[in-house]
Structures are given as C-alpha cells and as structure tokens.
Image 1 (cartoon, rainbow, N blue to C red):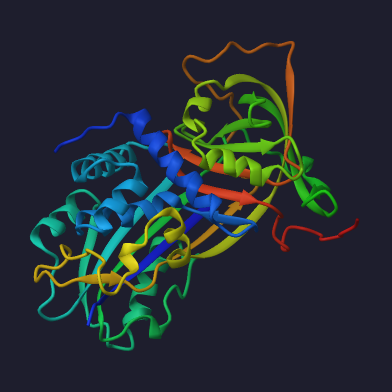
Image 2: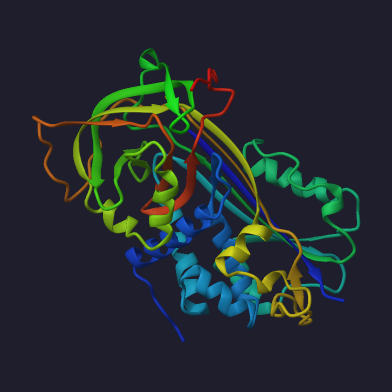
Length: 399
C-alpha cells in the first residue's frame, strides 16, 4: 500500500507558551482533516490535510494579522508556541516508527539575491519543520524542473511534473514544498486467491464490478448508531500505523458521514471504543490520484487573508520585512491499496475488550466509504472512495 502527497505554495511580492497533550493534538488534527475533506469535490479523492497543516503552520509563524489569527483558528492551535510544540512532537514521533516507511520532507526555496528568511523563521523552519533551505533563480527556465526532480526523489518517482515552467516568475520570492511518502504492508494480509470481481454500489442506482479482497481475521471493530456507521481498524507491520475505514450503513451515506465528522464528531474518542473481534472483511482494491486547488478550498475553511495581494499579513517570512501573499496553492496525492502484506499475525493493543469466540462481525465495504491512515494516532492521510479507478474496475454499469 502506497501513499504520496505533495503540497506546493509559491509566494509573490505585493506591488504565551502552550502545551497540548497527545489526544488533544490528535483531536485537533482530526477536526481540521474532516473539515478539509468535507470541502473537496464529490468524487473519489485522496488528500493529506496534515500536509496542508504543515505549510499553514509555517505560514502562521511568519505572519501577523489578518493571516495569523485565521491560520491559528483553522489549525485549532491557540498560539505560536503551540504550533512549535505540536509540530516538534510530530517530528519526534516519526523518529521511532517501526514496520513502515513514512517520509515527510519539507523544503523552502528562496529567490537568489538579497532575499533570505528572517532569522526567527529560519530557525523554526529547520528546528520545528526539519525543512531544507535552498537559494534558486526563479526566472531561470530550469527552476520548475529542478523542483519537480526533488519532488520525484521524495515520492519514489510517483508524482511528476508538479510545476509547469510558468508557475514561477520574477515576482516569486519563496516556494514551499511538502512531500510525503508512505508504504506499509498489512499485518494480516489479504490472500489474492480470495480476490474476485463483485458489485460496488457507486450510488443507489449505479453499480460497477471491481476486484474485492476478502479476509477473516481479528481486527479492531466498532459501530456507532448515532452516525449510522461501522468502524474497522487494520494495522500495518510494526503495528504503529493503521488504516481506519469508516463505512456508512447506507449506500448514499458518505456525504452525511463527512458532515458529521466536520461538525465535530469525536473520531479520536471513537477509536478508544473499538474492540478486538473476528471480522469477515470485504473491501475493494483501489487506486486514486487527486490534484487539489487549495486556493479555492482553504477560503471555505476561513483561510482567506494569505491570498490577499494587498493585506495578507505575511510580513515575517523574509528578513527585509516585505509583505508577501500566496498566489497559488496545490496539493497532489496518490494512493493504492491492494493485498500486499507481511506474514499474517493477530493485531494486539492494550486495553482491548477480550476476543469473543462466539462473535464474528461482517464488514462489507461495497459502497462509498472513508479511509484514514493513522500513524501513532496521528491522521496523516484521508481518502474518500466513491468509485474505484477505471484501471481496477470493470465498469459494467447497470441500473
């Protein structure tokens, strides 16, 4: 299973200390992620809200009002010290991950010449976000290609041509890029011999034949009648990363489910209620590629000032105090889920309800659902599967 995400933001020139505990931080991420995904197009999408948060957090540290207060509110963080504490915590968690590959790479490209990051922002970029710094001539026709090559190197060459040559020009001062790469194998693998074409209900009237995987194993499982959904958590090798699938009971229920999550549903609290039980699991193989225009999406979440060419408040990024604004913000992402897995072994976790040998649940994801990849309880990637890709689906539609 692979996931890749890129977030690109170029900047153009305009002619109290707080600690959050792990659960509070996870809850803040979950709320931002749900609101983020609720604003996406009503198609199959993959995104990394956390990837967007990385760069919005860096912007928060380099801005004053009006951008500063909007950014903190969107992130669910009270002040700059909370930003530093939270994202330093992310970095520390990543250092000890076992069993999977998760690389997060941040880079700040700065226009050659008399431009440099402010000393405070440079310190934060390196120490808080572990970002690389590089001077570049954005007027050179090769600049976009060089950034694209860096992106390819950080995503195992899965994401190419992120930037077009006309994305950069003489007004560009900074380019921030965040790249994520994830690869994990299931603790309990799906045997390909059990994969067969079955109907996937895109909506109440449309069905396609897709390869559906099957396994019967012990997983973390739960239900919540309040949102009419089932929960299934499947771990990857090392058991520090997992995929949570949230499946509405109704075929057309995924939009209502997203609304519940965006309105403040306690998803992190629900994870604590899952119990270990034998489950008959049927889920589709799927592949999604998405490009998201964040300049259209973020204002719907209350992040507007950073795009204002006249009064953004982004005046603490450069050492000369120049006011900048965001002219373009794009995220590209890719995910593929298949049978790959390590040797089968039972998933274990502390504080779980003992397995009942008498009970076997059924979890049949044959209609739109939400899939979330958690790493050490932090939600890194969200997918909303409304229909598997044409590459994996037979698309024998019928009414």
